Amino acid sequence: MMKKMTLGFAAAALISAGAVQADPKADLEAFQGYYKKIFPEVPLEAYNDGIYAIPAGQERAENWKLLLDFPPYDDDVAKGEEMWNAPLKSGKSLADCFKDKPPATQYPYAKDGKVITLEADINACLKANGEEPIKDLKKGKMALLEVAFRKQFNGKKMAVDLSDPAMQKAYEEGKQFYWTKRGQLNFSCANCHIHSAGKKIRGDTLGAGLGQGTGFPVWRQKWNNKGKPWGTLHRRYGGCNKQVRAQPLKPQSHQYIALEVYQAYMNTGVPLKVPSLRQ
Image (cartoon, rainbow, N blue to C red):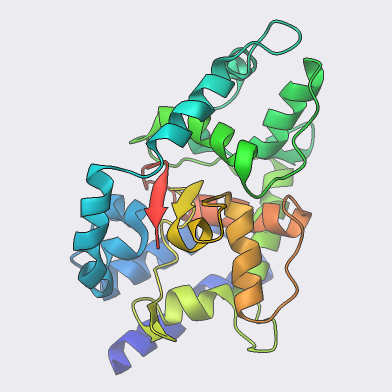
């Protein structure tokens, strides 16, 4: 236990040391290297399974695997694919719009000095083709359309490009957000998913930070109990903020976009696996 704590603090010191002058490559090596040390039996490619990839999640993994034999989300996925390929008012489809877009493994990306997310590109396509942009960016239609696009790249490894200044700035802001304590509980993302990865809080096992985001949108049992099973990554960000009793931000806020950039880069080399089934 002491060794794991020491490694955690060492990783924190190394990764957060770049606050003055960011070195994403060094951050990436430290971030992924930390998990390699504490979970040596888990290959990088397995982290897209979330909590079920690490030893502490194996007690729930068998039931999870059984559910995947007959996924509860298959009908919704088919509906999302139908919407993705359906003609819009212009006659074009979302599939047509995305023929010249980056692969899902390269989102977010920069264009004209701005960081572009998948949600932004979907709404831009809808608007350009005579449709109303989707207002609910946390669940429902947006989540299903994201699944339709991202699942086409399942098995492909994350490879976000930080060469543009806009992406570099977002990366630095996202890194700061990830490591900053907030809320009444005074927790940071790192407190839960680096220092406490594999440990239990209130009966729930905390997953590793590595791989988070590679399975989104997700179908979640907790959300299904309230009739809204699907969630985008930014819906989950808001939920995490609430859990530490911090004020959640709006989906697609610049802070959440920056956090998405940071996590996407930390996931370099981890394959997409969309959608995911979570508790």
